[in-house]
Image 1 (cartoon, rainbow, N blue to C red):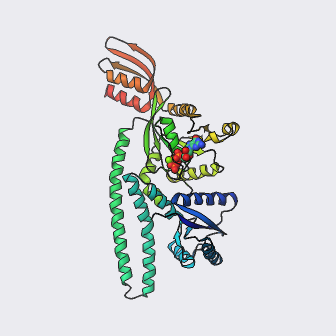
Image 2: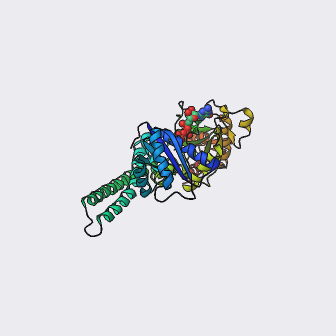
Image 3: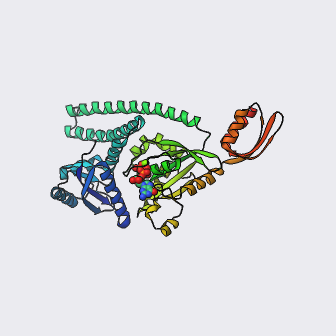
Length: 408
Ligand SMILES: Nc1nc2c(ncn2[C@@H]2O[C@H](COP(=O)(O)OP(=O)(O)OP(=O)(O)O)[C@@H](O)[C@H]2O)c(=O)[nH]1
Ligand SMILES: [Mg+2]
């Protein structure tokens, strides 16, 4: 499915206008470039709804064919998902290869997936995208066949294709389920530490910020969807707090449902988080729209209600006054500005998870004392003959765990 550097003509038919349309088209251009295509022309038709027959209306279809020939375009990219009927009609009228928004994003994901799990998820998404399309063309073939005895050779081939596809989908789902079981085990093992997920519009700087916060060196890449595989690192915070910080896949507007389904496991890392860091590219002229797109995706995966810290990144590109006006924590993941303030803000938020506890620990349980010292802030400590009394401010999960060790 990989696209060579191709010359793409993009088409949009629908009700978007003005700044909303401009943002949508700019995002589409970015997606085309990320997939390896250069946008050489754009066609926009203002309609209440796209034409059910050919996406564009008849007149615009002719214009698209002419433009494509003049511009030397080899590819037509539709700004939204197409029905197979619309896809066929566009292809018939323009003689171009047709790619819709979903296929475009799938193509980028296919090029980016690195881990075994990422690859399985992308393949599952691609096959789920393909299956209903095969079904619909099978329907049209049987109509061509004209009623009785419609089992022509074409259709039986389609039957086989469909069966193969379904088998492969079932197989992928099984393998993914196994990976997910593994993931939920490791999630349980790590349950003591609060989990924080980096979310945000693609290219906002999530991966760079992960590195800046965990001092892992390295950084992000200047391309859309650079991250497909969640990466988790331990985060050390002021007041001896610790957390796990996970990088996630970037969001765009209207993430295709096939992708949301296939990437459920990865997105679950987000849904199960205790806190979200919503990373925003403050230097982007459309950061507010990008934030809306992220909130909409969070709502779609059931994560809208999670506590969030809004992190305005890339402020090194802004004037100091503009950075100060940002409605959240202003940082530069690149040069480190604001990172300590962010660390403190995270610690403050997580502190709400902390409880004040007193433990009486037998001297024989040096291991438990070490845990309290490692994970809690010691408020008072008093050593006796056989035991030690500590008063501590400690994460609720650790408090429960230590109490269970002491009394259970
Ligand atoms: N000037 C500037 N550039 C930054 C900053 N943070 C990240 N970048 C750049 O922005 C680009 C995207 O960064 P990433 O960290 O890959 O962004 P991401 O959100 O992980 O992107 P995806 O994984 O593709 O969704 C890279 O070229 C980074 O070097 C920053 O604070 N300032
Ligand atoms: Mg990334």
